[in-house]
Image (cartoon, rainbow, N blue to C red; front, side, top):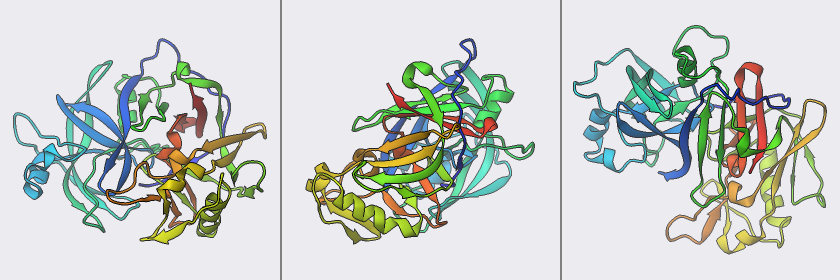
Length: 352
């Protein structure tokens, strides 16, 4: 998925107690080749799921007539389910195309429906898939819930957040989200504000300054660079010059050294060595020059389960094609993140 800036910081201001927020169930799910952060939604009475994507603006769902033509009965088995126009057929609006970082492209047409939430129903505009192209036959079509900032743009398609604000369902485009550390990680996406009861305050908002693997006994790598937090990404993508260093450090700075090898484009190791893995810590720069550590535990940077029949575990760290730092959704495990696009801030706190 596309990436978004991880920018400056100040102490979080909680959402006014009388302001409405929309809470959406989210979970970490396996689909196709990887894990994704998905939201459970109800649109026109139909249960659908979509990738929670802070790197894209578009909200779209898989159109049942199109997908059932490709895969008869597929809407019952695909993770995201399908949307169908009822009782009549969809009146297809203008087509538009969206591209993603994995090389996939989706062609959509515009549609309007009723989004149901804990504060009632509201009409929203979204896209429906009528074509999907991917560099791999193993990458299935997906649905998306885009949360990237619209910036100062006053034209084009509005994000779901923008639509909820303009329809006065919520009062601000601030949103937050969190994931538990359970094997099947679950959490909430909170549209319209924060829930201070869920995190250990105060919250910090940050910029990347370096990283460390294995704790204080080992030297820190200084970066002094912007990073990107992209919940649509399922990995930690790093500049090419740091990839080997990170993989080697993970294999040698834990409780015991073990062998890490490159296979099919990924770093893998014997799952029996998983118990020896060290923490990976990103250091962030606070508003007053203070240092804010973001500790990534092994459960977040290693694939949750090996592939069926395999005894190898995969490192969820890879080279970034744009030579940048991208922090994917696994960083959310055990954390609470608050996005304040209007203030150019992203906040981080430990989950209670």
